[in-house]
Length: 304
Image: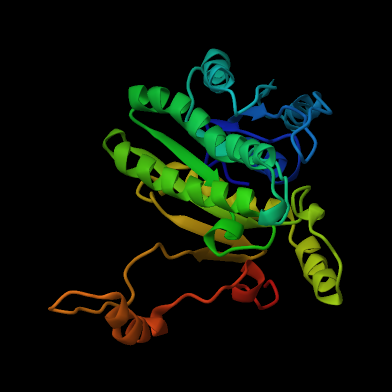
């Protein structure tokens, strides 16, 4: 891989396995020094293997790269600040952050507990805020930096039994856009990637029909390493003018996703009543309605 991140420092959260691990390895191969963050948790967020981050560090060092491990939780603001401090102490600066850490507590909405909703929001959305906020002070001082947030089509489009995860992932999109606007004056970029890849998180998908079996088979063909080139590019100087965008990456395909904008409008000079809304507004607007799709309905062709 070309040294597009030579002399840069990247922090990758949730990098002990799956997509995060491949992002960390790719960043190191591209010349970056890497802070590998992972608490060594199960898919539900329970601490399990605290050596996960160190194992990835060892892989990077054995390949000739530079890396340190960090075992803090992104849901803790103090731990997030320590991640940034560790990067600066070890390597002198911080140039890019990938907010990748996540957990799943899937369940249909009418069965979802407050605890499962809260836990997922804290890791994904609060985690992205905590780490980005900690990095923002360093980025402003340097007048440069890149934030890359891993979102999901579960939030962008929708999915069954993932109200907590979907809400968190769409929240990250709004957070990213706000960061892009607020930190533009300091040359800080903020973008999202919705990855399609087989990882621990997608391995929890329920397989209870031939259609789901086929979906899982296709997902298994999409390796986490396929996400790395786009993330590496967004962290590089070549992407200094790319900000506030939402990308999706599926095998060898890269998409830019649209963002909410008006699609149709109606006007009534006398104002609206509930009856005129029903009789005139909704029939006129209905052609602009978004179907009640899930992600697989929109991405309904085989990965390329």
